[in-house]
Figure 1 (cartoon, rainbow, N blue to C red):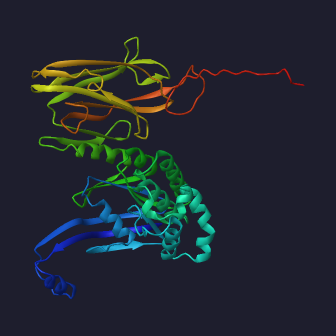
Figure 2 (cartoon, rainbow, N blue to C red; figure 1 turned 90 degrees about the horizontal axis):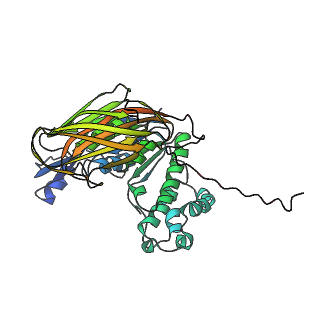
Figure 3 (cartoon, one colour; figure 1 turned 30 degrees about the vertical axis):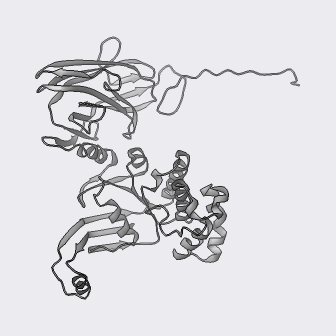
Length: 411
């Protein structure tokens, strides 16, 4: 069942020559505006019950404006918004909170505005106070709160009663890791009960852990809508977009969408994962020594060349990554058509499952400066456990467990 439906949403801000022109426009006299700035255009999508969608995009892409329209705090200039049931939104820290009121007083006010009765609010207040975990500060003015404390109260209030739609705009990026994990756990519980989620975050891990889809916005328009890993890979390439940089996506043999980008000033000719006996492999044993061999070529003279690689799990979450900038092995003053062989030795201390390797050629510690080539899903492999003790998780951390029993008083 659809809980949110957007049909051709657009939002424009008009700047008039005078206040008289602005007022005339309110009454239907369409004076020519000095300037029109469209922050959203032709936005259409549907959010289903229990579905989680992330909005991604660079600053100014229109994410926050779109969330405000869905939450009802601003109106669209064109199009329709159809919303079923109750929406709870955390758009800005302390939004709607009075700085001179205490956390408790603000919680009462906010929930009253949301339509809850005094009896309902009174019964849920102990749970809000307990979830926020700010102690005596709950009865002190909001103006003395840190940003993390404001986020704790705002989230506790917004999720005091399970909403049909929960909207979160970057708020969870504020504060400590403990409360972020606690908040994500509550969101997941709500999702299991049917709550739909709209999330704006720059935290790729959070997006891929919580969301079913990602909608990528650019200059106020939707440019991608799909599976989180594929869309976030495209976004990763897009933020480096410079002259002569190309981005392509195609279906990989694994069934996933492979993203490749770069200026091709340097390219990877071949890559493979090898065991100690020199055989190429796609099946790996927990704890096995491996060699990642890569052959690259420069297509023109370069000042610096850096190789980077990442190992990702089946959900696209990064298990490990580094590059030759961080290891102090960047190559300098390269001529055109130079061949460079890289061999990376490592031990597969990772858990059972399917993994992929991303490869990158850049000029520094990040691809944001120069992205010569970036290949997601360059290699895929499967890890099996044949001789280690049974364990769960993405990492094999061999334990040494000491146990002592004192049976002197045993009967």
